[in-house]
Length: 404
Image (cartoon, rainbow, N blue to C red; front, side, top):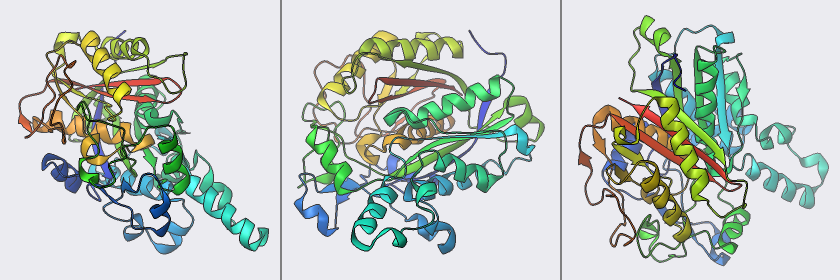
């Protein structure tokens, strides 16, 4: 059922392996740059995968020293992205009790947990940081953003693996449409480039092993794809009730028209086309769109052999073969819990600017593809309606619908 409460995106913010803000990240994306680089740390030399997509700009370059040391890296980048989005929206003068936060994460403060455990083993319990628990809590990014902005309408923290950022946006949409908030700062974050996480993903065969050519490793929909490139970063969007935004003269990038959230209920790591298809259809229904209305899909497309094949089938069944598809992880790498939020921003900018980013490293498209994946150069084309797909381990499926 279509909601009678229109919701618009009035602010965007991010920090990614392509840039320290939206402007630089978007420009690098359109230029086809890769954020994947070799890992310079000594510990990386013994790993099966020795590269990742690391932040282009450190959060400590933005945050004060005292502030940064009380936050895990995943929380630091969340605050950086949220502040940019809030400023971009013009710092809305919303009643704090009508301002909510929804910020998801797939891994949370794991760097803090691992580092503090090392410290515990080496130097004893009295050497631990007094901020250890707040820094490792998975809800702490949402808490840090709500504290920073003085938001008192709720701080929600979805933990839906690689769909976390997208689910946070779906939560934000629901909060506004239910009448509980006038504005929501929604997004996702993850920053856990560590021997444990990299080795764990590598052991399950999820990561690309192209150590000699990191920039060519992320290959969504390409026949030579062999896994994703692990990345770090955060993305945030300011969502507002449309009449509230209009009353204050705010610029709207796009309308956040609908969201579909489903679960597979079948397998922890194996994607299921039925769950993805139901999420697509739910997003279209809540947005009041038909499949033919969709001009563009920003695919989840991690570059794993099985994942891309299942998603391609879901796109074909859910919206057909006519939309132009892009896979921005080919440049950013896989931002895990931040991916859905960052890719939602890219989708919003595609609508706002009328340009579909090209997919990098798509040299030999999979023969099973029935739709066009934009490659080589960005495509200048009007886009009226678009979907952004996000799927996560545990059978989480989130599809977001935006309109111009």
